Amino acid sequence: MGKKLVLAYSGGLDTSVAIRWLAKKGYDVVAYMADVGQGVSFDAYKKRAMAAGAIKVRIDDLKKEFVEDFIFKSLKAGAVYEGGYLLATALSRPLIAKGLVKAAHDEGAGLVAHGCTGKGNDQVRFEVSIGALDPKLKVIAPLREWELRTRNEEIEYARTNHIPIQTTKKKSYSIDVNLWGISIESGPLEDPYHEPDEDIYKITRGIGSSSAKPVYIEIEFKNGAPVKLNGKAMDGVSLISRLAKIAGDAGIGRSDMIENRLVGIKSREIYEAPAAWTLMAAHKALEGLTLDRELAHFKESIALKYAELVYYGLWYTPLREALDKFIDDTQRKVNGTVRLKLHKGNCVVTGRKSPDSLYRKELATYEEGDKFDQSLAKGFIEIWGLPYKK
Ligand code: ARG
Image (cartoon, rainbow, N blue to C red; front, side, top):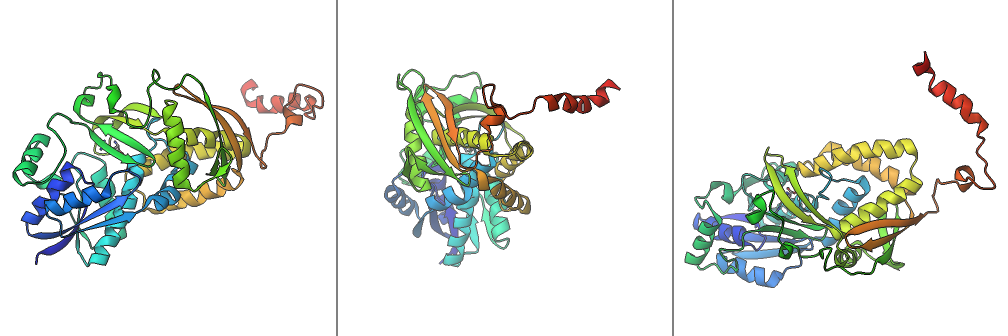
């Protein structure tokens, strides 16, 4: 019997080849799969892992935890990386790492492995998270070590080792899918001037093929988290799945970025996150109605930091935890309903209402019933502008 090792297994080419490579090195490989809403056939992947040489496959359904402890935290924080990325992949990594560590403990394994390359952010996110959760675990990253240089060499390795994979030598995108969104990179996208082919998009329609008629939706929030869609109470997982379909059909949620990776490389990535962008827009609109000005402005400044923490793999850190306590406190009054119009890629907020609204019509109105004493403005401006007159 070899040394037991638990591998974070995605079911794709890299990790399937990794199973055999690790097995050949003498490890007893347990393949660990986390269901974070990637919508794949886990049964088929389980067979593939066993065929590749795993001694066992473990599958954990982490969707509920993903939504409640990761996605909604990021939504409440308003975290957006470099203006275009709602962090779907980045948010899933610390959760998968947590599941992996737990699996290693349950299996009595002192070793874990992942299928990330040495150039990306995900290796950092996995290893920093694993280290924070159990510093004693040793991590192996086959893709940083093995002699297989290209995708085609991996395919060749899979073929000669009889590992059942579907990939052909042509299809060259790297795709990561979960409930919050999809990340697509490499292949033709490596040319930043190349327009993405329409068929890379999995959950959003293009402007041309999305519905000619606008769709109205209503989202209700409680303490900053969505609880109802179109008047129907739903758990977070169902709400996001349902909304992704509606918003994706309306062409919402695509972004095309050159982003700055943690390891210093600029890379091209295409994202699809229809539910995420719609919820972000709705949540922001409700905050506009319910948050005090100073709180709202301060919170915007930490949204940026929060996005960096998530992107940089610093989830299990004192700063992220402290920020979440602050953010949760800001969300006590973020209750109410937002109405949106989704049409051909546009996500437009058309109305918002809240029992905790800070909007006062009698102060804002230009009509009858104005309670704002305009005569006070003169003195206010006098003092406000005083330093610049002197
Ligand atoms: N660039 C994104 C991130 O670092 C996604 C990485 C994974 N992308 C992929 N297509 N496999 O979070």
